[in-house]
Image (cartoon, rainbow, N blue to C red; front, top):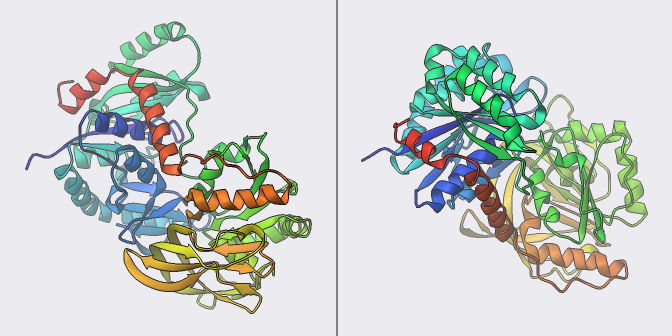
Length: 510
């Protein structure tokens, strides 16, 4: 069997655009008829996803797979690190939890992962025409080089040519590109076949003398100057500017999301950014909650620590005030647990606190257990309710669960949905809870808002409450919206890179 070709995108730093440009190349190659797959050997992010097989992977490879028009597979991201504190992370290997490690322990453990990564990569390369590999951070982290498995170490494992990306929007792009190349070994420099300059604003002719000098200094061609573009595509992790923006300020409906220190899966709220009627804002310490129509407490990688943060920062009081003044409250996963009466952690899953009182806004109690739930599910809204869930009974939703807590409902809460399919198999059990007055809800289902009928019904309930006419226009599904954005991204990149040279690099001709 002929093994597929590969190309690797590395960057001078984090957030230079590696994830988006990987998605762009996946889309471009796919549109040109090549069976293409993304790959990142090691990802560090709290945004994760559960595949059809119940395996966990980073979200960046999910949107890259979507751009390539294929289903996400955990093998696209064989090592996922989910930070649980400043120096600890949960290590997930091939979609399953391995164990928690300190940074030092993991650094010493990395060499043991090389053979597994090589096997996974070869499996993907043997079944695809092109593998687009994404690096992490910078290949010039010389203190980490001896045990690297994600930058030049990965390029060696896969024997891949490399394109180096610099972000001109930050300033200092020529120095960062030249400095990165100088810090590489001679063998590593030979792998770098081209340079992308990303996020350019202005007249390219002003840039050209610098491009020529950079090429003369490095001997490496600049294969593209990619203009700055605005794309509503999911972020890989919490290093994002979306938390700082007030999106759709003129929207009739205000949604506020609490930006927890350990916020996870904030992709749950991407759908709201696609809807013109919704003004979405993220709230953190020092901010005032502005009486939103819908206030959301998101998922958390450390629920108890984030509950303490809400308490100590004063945001808990702000949330309770918003509830008393009429806001609907919705919790997802860790946020659902926080809304309850009590969280117990007898096994020390999250730390040394055995038990802590919740916000008492939802009559539920949670206990943490050792085994992590990771599953895709389909469900039906089971409750006939007033309030935010009015007219939702019978609507189908789907999503995925990632949690270690088990939540029990009290007398003053009803189940939110009935799960009828789990990992493709028929089942029947309840998930989530809703208060008797229909104003507070919680669920373990990440992605529940992605279902347009469900979300639009909730938003129409809010419009009616405000005395406004419900929206009659059916919005694009989130999937349709994403596909449009992937094409916009691919068009911009394809029109501003030397694609023929990229194909030459893939074929070893350059």
